[in-house]
Amino acid sequence: MKLATYMYNGEEKVGVISSDMKSVTDISQLGLTYASMEELIRNITDEEMVLIKEKLPTAEITDLADVELMAPIPRPKRDIVCLGINYDEHAKESSGFTNIQYKGTPAQAVYFSKRVINAPGPFDFIDGHSDIVADLDYEVELAVILKKEAKDVKKEDAEDYIFGYTIINDISARTLQSQHKQWFRGKSLDDFAPMGPWIVTADEIPFPPELNLSCRVNGELRQNSNTRKMIFDIGYILQEFSAGLTLDACTIIATGTPSGVAMGMESPVYLKEGDVVECEIENIGIIRNTIVCGK
Ligand code: MG
Image 1 (cartoon, rainbow, N blue to C red):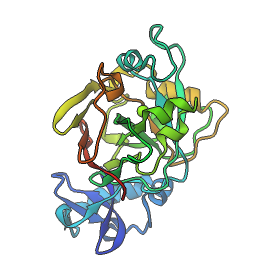
Image 2 (image 1 turned 45 degrees about the vertical axis):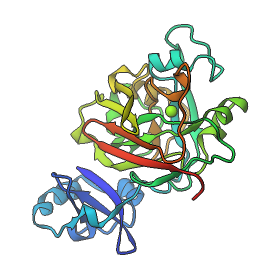
Image 3 (image 1 turned 120 degrees about the vertical axis):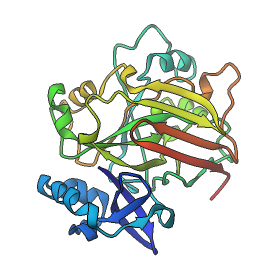
Image 4 (image 1 turned 60 degrees about the vertical axis):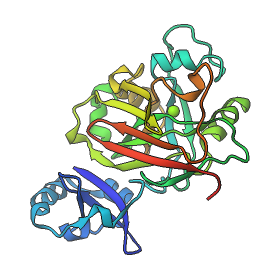
């Protein structure tokens, strides 16, 4: 099932995307009253999930062209948990820029957090902050969304904690990322976490996910890999990161990006005003955002 947050007639709604991905059904039409995606994730029951599938074929639909898709969780309550350097080829290309020298496949996962007050939707404009950022970069990533509180998770149980998956572009300001030692600021400027186009529930994607993911800038392919190439997979991440640390329901985990980012090029071609960045993950969809200066 694909669940989206969207704006329709000036109202924020949560809905179910049709199988042909051309329309959406407001969950209130299906007998559910959750006011937001986070409320739905925290409270929805297995019975209600079944009910949605039963009622969907005959429920009222709205053409997707008539709604504005938003990030599935537009205002995350927690910082996003991010994996750095989680694909080997990206580890190589990042050497030198992120203060982490490449000495073979990393033995330890790199965790950092990303502040998000308002996540841009899948087709929104993104402020590139050109007044303070000269090296704006893109990172296509598979994002995992937890459905319940997670602590001391065993990797063989990891799947039980996952509500679904979405796409995130972990937009990064490379100098700000590296010059302050911690990556927090360079990863957390406003608009740096476009997400969507919706959440695909975990039952639709075999675990662990082995999905092609790619990023194009103005139609030019920059990143192209598969999530099976993660150094630390989702089970490993959940087991290690939840050991002694409670993760809330609705926590978003960005699982790292493959190679092909601008900072990895011999002559980096960073994002500039007017560039269109398209991130795609197999069986989830596409997000397409245009860079602007100031919003
Ligand atoms: Mg990243």
